[in-house]
Image (cartoon, rainbow over the protein chains, first blue to last red):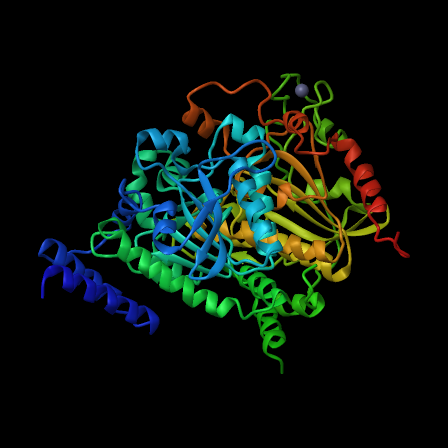
Length: 321
Length: 294
Ligand SMILES: [Zn+2]
């Protein structure tokens, strides 16, 4: 077998392991390293951060192009502006109409400046909400792609209410009456990520990252030293396997060896399979069930301790008896 | 309209708050957190011993509103300072196994006499019942981790269940970094709880106090039916240092203060501390669900 075939087999194996929840990820990543470098090594969180930020990493528009049959981009928040850091529109998934929303970084310096490196301002989040409500009106599922360093921290952003825009999205997406499937495809940091990140099912690409803030932000707040980002990344539990173990995401989409950018078609095909699978499940649910289950999902999240008597009482209520 | 049986759903997701603590009278704790008590940090005028207690911790010369603890706030805001705490025993764990987080928590608990950065419970204002949550900046900068998210959520859902208005006094430096993704998710949880409260047609009022930032501002604190702020409180998403670092220019005078937010249209009113009790009472009175409907 050629190296490339080995690599593809490895991805299949990983998907199988994922489906059956077999814990062979450690073995797989060691195999991968061996394939890549010819020697055994262990992968670090920081390596994933670097892959998540790779300049050639496919973004929302790359996936839209590969996954959907047709797509029309829709612009503007109907209040003041159009934010190119978030793109959205209506697409055909097979023959099914869906609304797609995602962060978009630039693919070169010029585009990055126009798109503000995928860091959305209030207009971006408000456009996302407008499109989601339009989807709800016409009973279309929503697919979101998350890839951002965070919401834009600037004067204009604060002046036009970035907090209010994100907060409103959280509340409205949590009670939207159509299916929402989210994919964290690259960086998923802070309120900027979760601002379009509430869904019925949430998936992460293998090397995508998701946490409360970027490793640099984390290091500058807790260590008062942004240059310790690498150390922060190892402590933050920001990788896809971490998030899966916390039940924050529902599954991992495995990438080709070397990262999503080495074979965007292959990565897109994997996402496409997942969308088909998720929609086949979610489109059977009534709007009431969708909102109920999504609320349940959100209301369960949290790690805390409570005295025993209360716990038992709580379990009794949940399971009866 | 959500359209599913909200009553049964509430029972499923949160147990009814049975373990109401005995009502306690707030304000007895000696560990009152008031920065720089001997003089005002803004106008630098000297302050007499006990003077701040009489003025509700507002500088008599320049009206600077000092940061205060939840129990101090409760003492002069609710009837008789009487407060029935809920979820008092919910405490933080260390979900990421973050180094030194446990030690930091127990040290903060000892220092503040509190279990977490928010106190939630039931009380009355001018004889009208409500559920209230008051955040504490002196507990790890009022940062929101799982427990803050959970207690705010329970306050909101208890309001929904008991058909009472919900009031939150917000103050926070932002997310509880040590809890990583769990901290971020509390933004979603609390905001979703407010969607459920809205379904019941019950009001949610927010009072923003100095300072309120990050994940708290970008979730429940910006979702009030009516949003008030104390004078000159700093309120924003990103902190001033982060913004200056990003755009490499000095921030304008008054940026991110209450009056700035009022001018930009993001809060309803700036209200002095001495008038908050009366204002909240008026809001509760004018937000009663109408009996016959319009
Ligand atoms: Zn003063």
